[in-house]
Image (cartoon, rainbow over all chains, first blue to last red):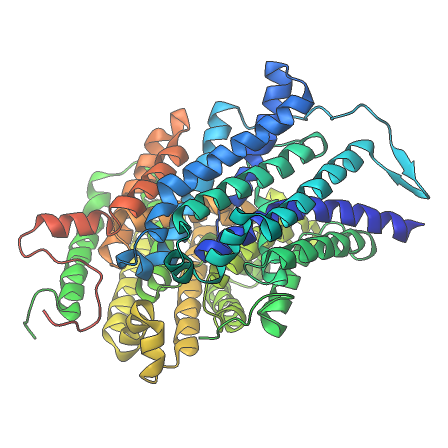
Length: 296
Length: 323
């Protein structure tokens, strides 16, 4: 039952990708910029979890929510200190939006990597598992217990996020700002506050993704690079700014990678993402569920 | 030709004169600096200045953001190295092949990505850079992987290499200056300042964006290829995002959208980086500086210097705007 194993494993990884990519899609939705420090939200989450559990000695079940709070705080700070000029006013910054956002978020990414590298050190830490379980068999499939728990938490988070966006007032405000920032402001929505909330949620989700994977991946300071790249592929595949597209595309990418690694090439499994990215840009630039991209 | 000092042509000329003065000073440096170690540091600074100029043509003058200048330098170095390793091709073939190969790759990638408006170039080049690095590192039989690949050297003399890099820098600057003064350069600026306006005036925006990206990649490829022969080794680390971060730091700190800025930034950042290497905080310092400059001094040191002068003029403005 190799195919079934691969499918389940792919879906599990797809869930972790989804936690990250959804936040990236939401940020793109409200600000129309890409956060190139998104992988470092993930890294900070992984480190917060590992250090709180190993060095401070907290139970993993306490360290996990604290890592999420840390990620949310970081996201909120990034919006407050660095992204405000993009969302306040319609003055000169709109001309330099791309320049500013690429340079600042990429700079932030390097800053966080190097600060962690200097303060904590470049070596890898293995996080403690949430539960000490051996592999469980679910039907005919054998799954690592930690992965199964992490996947369950991810599903709960994603469902919760979907309900939040669909049902709650704040969620609807986020949708409105993403559709038309000026229109939403005219309707009395505080777009700046909404953007802060989006950054905090994105930071928390990316940090949780890192914390949940910390027992499986040996976090190092540059651990965020590949999850971030996968999130970029996913948001393009799903349609820039589309949260539902990002969820679907994350699961799809997880499964495709899982099969690619076994049937095509393990060493080059990461190259699949780039291949998909280029194919999507060639064939369907608006992605699976996105609005039509404006060609120049 | 004289006119109001903030006309683009006049600003560009002042900028070009400043950079020529800087280069003239650099030609005298080997008279005072003779240790191979210090010359080596200066050579690497000029390598970074070339990358910074290449990135700046795209980001500063055309408004398109690539995150792969270092990756294209790596690929240029590998093109030269691999041609020699597998086919025994001499550097006379290998270096032009590095330039043409990276230009071709840039053109292909640009064709796919630059049709679209938005952050697609930054997204795709970042993914491309990291994946190219991993693929090169994993292809042990073909590229010797993470061990790196030996590249033959052009000559032994450090001073010779210094003047080779400086000569390349001068040729690149002359080329960029004449390009920016030409019709094509005006099109680049128009695309940067207002893509919709440029399109409505009949400029083939996609074609010129792709052209800027191709030239930018070729400059990076050339720099990488020369760097490979200088250090006699190319490795996947050459293309890491850290190196790209250094290039961006140089341009943003020196002054984006100018010719002098990248050169000053490259010397300043790389020399400081050597100085701070002992305590290993150079990347923290540069990343923080980049964020502060982008946030508060977006015209960089060049802009600050211009502001300090009487009849201040911002280096970046709308093409042909009335005074």
